[in-house]
Image (cartoon, rainbow, N blue to C red; front, side, top):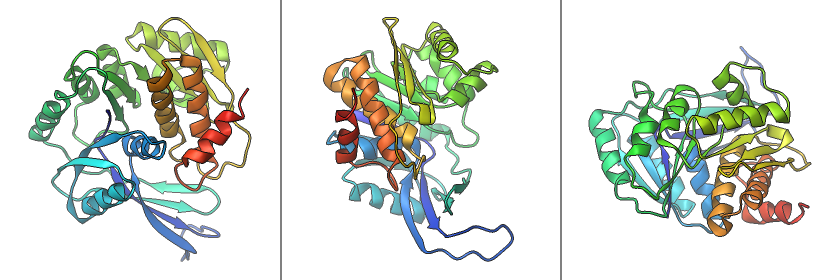
Length: 299
């Protein structure tokens, strides 16, 4: 089973307008809600690929109820614990480019974290656990390290986070981490541009504890440095990018999906890039047919 954990999920309100003017009254031509959060995105895409997944996390209030309802509509097994307060609402204004207002979200208690650790302790060898996204306010910066250490040996842990939570998680030796190029620069306070430089710093992350490092390069594709020392590059697909939100999460889902089938790093990277590109070309997260269309067209 593949489990995803989203500590700070959201209900995303997307408003589409022909233009957006600060300080003026703006009128939308379309608006809708989608479930939000990096781990949730991974679960949605995996489910669309036909993979069973369980979404873990915390949800509260009327917004939390709606979040769980939307996940059930996507046929996702939603195992969210009740949290104090309302699940946050993030606002995304689409006027040709995306302007985002992300709320801070709920606060978790020590009891919440303890219950979560107990749940993660039930995972068995061969399971996957994807720890993704921002952490709630007041939560310890080493939360992902502590959660990763609470699972049994043989559980494949994936971490997609930034800054200190990611640095701390490296000590738990996660199977995969996925920084993007900007996050890689921030981690090392360095200007990183060339493929050689990306590979150099990815190897440093392996020295720091990661087993495999997948670096997303946006419209340029992705680079993977694997545990055997392999260095792989896959360019992004050409097309009209209409939505970059969730593209990185789609890469994570695509990698897990294909690696679980093949244990082949090169094929998994190719599928990850196809999934990320397919989402970038879609209004929201990609459908299975679009991903396979791009994947089958790769050399």
